[in-house]
Structure formats: structure tokens, C-alpha cells
Length: 325
Ligand code: A3P
Image (cartoon, rainbow, N blue to C red; front, side, top):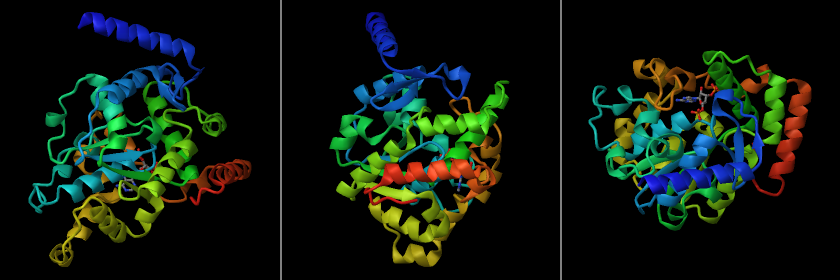
């Protein structure tokens, strides 16, 4: 009702006035706010809270969780293809990835679905079953029913230096598109260092999922971008097993694992018409989700002093966690 909507807007306005605020990487976003330990735009916060309050998980749900720029697009494509592989014919025409972007097939809850509507019709939005969707929200802030149910979470992280350069390139393209002046690498590094960007700080995000996956390995699969780049077949088999849909011997003999790896590869996805033109659901051009898709590209950008500061930060943040990059 109108009354409920108004009081919810008032509540949100009050919250925004009481929490710390920082300048956003994109002025169009109007600043980022610190909520439950992570930074988020005002618009994003509204849908994060709707998602937290209204979403009801099923035990059969699968959640793709990532920090932005850690390979979300790739992980969406891989999880979609693996989970639903028996639901469409193996020939080239039938594969939904050829006609829809990974972000249309596996939608973001807080950046997309709940942004449009606080009570979305999830049965229709998740066309295939079991339901599969994505989020960038830190583990601690996920809707309670995701944490308390038996639903599964696939998380992917990436070397922080590559993630940072990927983010800087992504933001630079968005700023160019909206005719904002470029953000220097120095300025961007400072923001990264302080963690003041959407869903940041990075290390707290990664550690939250890392610890949860250590405690509950059957619920949370923790993947690294670099490991997938190194041996995609092995990681895909692992993913399928975790999702409870292991590849059969017959499938392996028929080359199904390689087929999935192939169609989801950077080179294939980037070249598809659906991915290299058009606007993404939340106003971002599809093509900028594809950069170079390489490991170690940071070495072409970071100065020695940035590398030194970053290495120190990594060491400080990950000490005694058992996690390395
Ligand atoms: P680079 O900017 O280093 O090229 P996200 O999907 O989380 O936004 O992450 C984007 C990063 O993943 C970009 O990295 C992009 O090139 C890379 N990427 C996109 N699709 C990929 C794929 N199919 N395989 C490997 N990397 C991919």
C-alpha cells in the first residue's frame, strides 16, 4: 500500500542519514553508504533490504555469489550450463547462452530483481528449476533463509590485484560512457585500499565466504578464478558434484564437460552477438563485462609501490586464515 511504501521510504532516508557515507566511483550513483559492514549505493541499499526481508529460500535453490569483477559472468554461465544441462538439447541452437546473456539467465537479486520490485514473482523469474540466482552481498548479510536452509552457494574469488584492475577498467568505461572525467589509478587505488566501493571491502567479503565454506563445505563451494583458468574440466567436475548433478561416465565419454567449458569460455562468450551488443538489465552495456579475461594483467598497470602496499594489505588481511592468492 501507499502508506507502507511511504513509511518504508522514510525509514530508509533515516538510515541513510545515520550511516557513514563516501563518494562513489561513479557520481551517478550518488555516494556509497556503510551498511552492516559493507558499502552500498542508496538505490542498492533499498533492494538489499527488500531482498533480506522478503526473500524465502528453498532447500533446492542454488546461489552464485561473488565479489564484483571476480568472474561472475563466467561463473553464472558455468553454473547455469552444468545445473540445467539435461533440460535443453545439446545442439548449438537450443543452448540458452546463445540467445541470452549470463546476467539475464542468472539474475542478480539485489542489483536487478529486487531493484524493480520488492515482491518479485520468483517462480517466473527463475525459468528453469531448481531456482538459480546471483548476489554480491557478503555472507553475513545474506537473507537468513539462505543461511538457514539447505540451499547451496557457489562462491568465486580472484586475485585482489587483478580484481582491482578489472574494476578500475570497468568503472573507467562507465565513466567515459556517462561523460564523467576519468578516475586516475592513484585515486582508484586509494579507494580500493580503504574499501569504499560497492560491496567492499574486498577482503572482508572473501573471508566471510571462506570461513563459512570451511565450516560448511557441503553448503558453500569456494572457487578461485585462477584455478578455473588453470584446469576448467577438473573444476567443472567438482562444481557438478557439489551441485548434486555429477557428470556420468557416459557424459564424460561424450565430451559434455569440454562442451560446457567451451561455450562458457571467455573467447566464445565474448564473441556472441548477445554479449557484445545491447544494454544489460541494469543499464550497463553487455560488452564491458568482457575485458581481457587474463590472470596477472595487474602487472601491466600497478606501480612497484602499489604492489608493495597491496602485498602488505593481503598479508595483513589473510593472516592465519589459510587462504592465499
Ligand atoms: P578482466 O577485466 O580482467 O578482463 P565479472 O563477471 O565478475 O564482472 O568479472 C569480469 C571479469 O571476468 C573481467 O576480467 C572479464 O574479462 C572476465 N570474464 C568475463 N567472462 C569470462 C569468461 N567466460 N571466462 C573468463 N573470464 C571472463
